Length: 192
Image 1 (tube, rainbow, N blue to C red):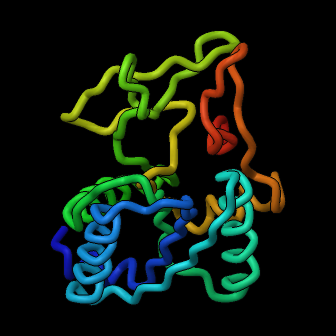
Image 2 (image 1 turned 90 degrees about the vertical axis):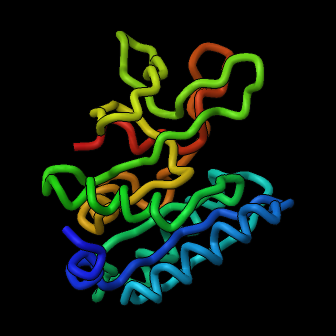
């Protein structure tokens, strides 16, 4: 499907952006490229941003704001964008293309790596018993996983609505595995 067809099918895009205290120039350049590409391709763009010292607090505030704002007229797609990610407009197009390919897919995250320089892992996990294990990077296809990070992630409105119904305004908290923090945005895990 061409970008013009995608922009007609998913006309209204709302990006949700939890802000960190310090934001890099590369992030600003990425956002300018994304918003410019969205407008030039015919999308209608809205953005919700918030700042807090705890990212789960930011995410929960954004979910509540989106729920309150779009209760009667939701956008066609939500795009979570973390302010520590660097991306290009074509990354958005690739995600949207893959999400559009299957109506069964409600949440699709781009692959990105943890910031741990000693042991970088893909922020996408499969459940193994009671634990989550990072997947191996496979750049050739979409993989089904049990949990993803929201660094650059498309979410269908029906998923946001189902998560709101299940979790309310406290969808996000730190997820621990033993003594380690696995992530702050993994309560999107195991949702059906």
